[in-house]
Amino acid sequence: MIDKRPFHSLGGADHGWLKAKHHFSFASYYDPAKMGWGSIRVWNDDEIQAQTGFPPHPHDNMEIITYVREGAITHQDSLGNKGRTEAGDVQVMSAGSGIRHSEYNLENETTKIFQIWVMPSSRGEAPSWGAKPFPKGDRSGKFVTLASGFDADGDVLKIRTPARLLGATLLKDQSESYTPLATEPATTRHLYLVVAKGKVSVNGVELNERDGAAIKDEAALEILALEDAEVVLLDAA
Image (tube, rainbow, N blue to C red):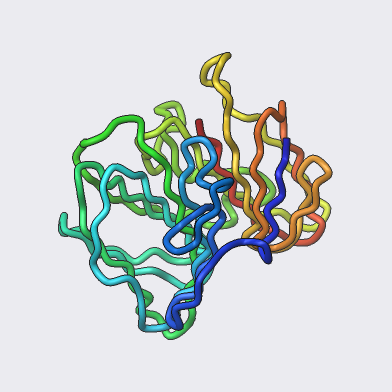
């Protein structure tokens, strides 16, 4: 099953400094049919104007992944962490028992990000933060794991949930396949794919730039680039 979520159909808000589109119910946007997808709770498509951002605010018991599409985001939190994450790179904040953080666009251009929230496997753990560069050349024509809750995925950003975030850049007419994780025979995986740039087809379903697709019960995915494209895929419980 592939449920296409066209970008123009997404809920959202325009705060002036922030233009946000929500793949799932968030803040003032509420759709009882889109409260999440398995353990995936939030996928926001944010455009943050230059020299603005999110002032310090709290979170707890959520895995929060930021994928930077364009520009850069500067992070600071109550643990003393500071960092600047650039386009193509990823940061992960495990909110755990509680953390305050700010996310500012200190650049002279608009920053565009995907912010993804996934529910953790357990509550009340110590909070943490980390970031990692992922040069696009390393994922040219193939999926590369960006963050994972599986030890077998090695030296990637860790999330505290049985999920895997992947990214791929594909040239026009290139294709890449992906087989969903099989953690337990009785477990249904919930996949969510968003086209960061370009246009692709996923098992014959065409997706334009910034469209999403909620996927489950597909034995494998065949992603074909209909034009040069960048895709982000989350495979979650």
